[in-house]
Image: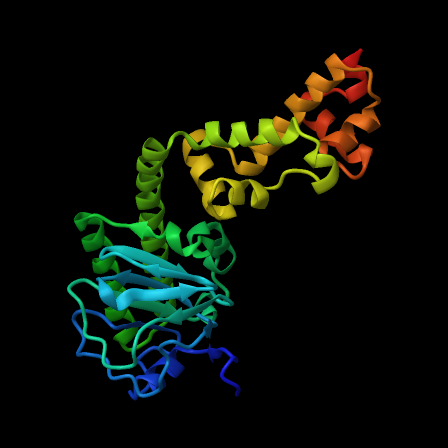
Length: 307
């Protein structure tokens, strides 16, 4: 393996091999680096090396031990920050190899997708957008919230260490769903406080869409998308959509469609341009796609709406 090749972590057991420890009690779930554990002794150098994860992980960061790089961006998580990672994502632990000491409240929960096999959560886990947020969109917990999620993780750890029976997997998955439910609740609190500090997100999105759709750029660059709008507002696509759902009850895609329809109505009422010309001017590659969306949202075809 060349120095540029990422180190792939494909199992929970592999992490324990890096730590020079025996396999964990449960093959698909473990808690590592926790404050209540002995200090970790890393047997395989992993710091300053790109890692491709095949696991889900949720990490509560306690302080200086949590400096990571996601892609090209370094992230210094503050104490009390909850960071999420999904299979297929890469990260780089930054620092010098050594023996990280456990911190006051830190821990990392890791679990393999196989844990969810056959359970409803295996399909529903995609609903938890925080696994796809950018590093700077991590969840910042207050003291009470840290205590809540840590208690749930310690419960998961205890359950994973018990002798398995017919109910073991169901109990573990129920614990995970409860943990994710609390994370959604705490993110909703963070969305509200962030919106208050930085201005209402919807107003910022509408200003961006009005400026974009009122310019010649759609004809050259195409329709506005969740990804392009999120980039303009300095969010990741999933974070933007979840912010807007919390603020308005509708997704970023819904608001983009509404802006397109309002811009189309103004052009239909204020110009003699053909429906096709209006479609192209808004960024549609096919006029029939514009007509379909317009009728879906208004109940009328563009020509009938114009009268």
